[in-house]
Amino acid sequence: MHGSLCACPFFEVRSPADALGGAVSAWASRLFLDCRPACCMTVHRKGCCHRQGCHFPVSMPTRIRMLRENLLDPADLPVAEDHVTVNLLGTIRMTYAFLPLLVGKDDAVVMNVTSSLAFVPLAGTPAYSATKAALHSFSESLRVQLADSSVQVIEVIPPGVRTTLLGQQDDERSMPLEDYLTETADLLREKPDAREIAGERARFFRDAVANGTYDEVLAMLSDYR
Image (cartoon, rainbow, N blue to C red; front, side, top):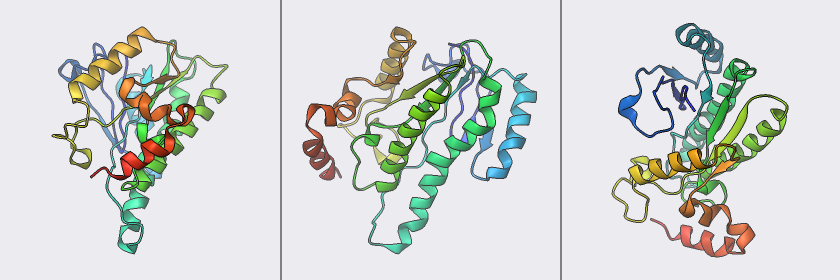
C-alpha cells in the first residue's frame, strides 16, 4: 500500500515511499489539519485535494488524547469532552470530509486506529476507553456501508505501547514502539485483506470476552498505575 496517512486531531498527511513500513524518515511531506472545529473540514478537504492532487489511497485517523479522569470530580468533565471531540468526532468528521475522495480509487483503504482498551476498559481513563469502543463500532458500520465499494476498512488495535501517552515511554509492561511498528507493518503485509490488525498482546484484550477472561482482565487493568 502506498499513500497518505492522517492523524487526529491534526491530520498529518504524508506522502511516503512506504506509508506502512514504519520508517518516518522516508515520509516526504506533512500537512497538519486541525479537526476540532467541524466547520473547517470542508476547507481542509479542498486544501488537501489541491495539494495532493486528490490522491488519497490510504486514510488513517489515529488516537491522540489519553488522560486520566476522576468521574467524581466535575472539573474533569472538559477532559472527557475533549476526548470525545478529538478521538471520536475527529475521526467521524474526517470520514465525512475525505471518504468521497477515496470512493472509486483503486486499493483505497481507511485505517482506524482504536485500542485494546476498546474491548476491556482502563478504569482510570474512562472517556478514552469509551471513545475507542465507539470507534470500533463506527468502523464496523463503515465497513458494512462500504461493502459494495472499492474502499477497504481496517481497524488497527494497538496494545499498551511505550509512548508519551499516559507517560508510558519507560513502562516495562508496555510494548516498545519500534517493536509494535514492525509487528503492525508485518501483519499488514501478511494479511492485506484483514478487517482487524491485532498482535498477540492486543489479542489478549480483544478476545477476553470470547475467552471468558473479561472479568479477570478488567480487574488486572484496574490495578494498573
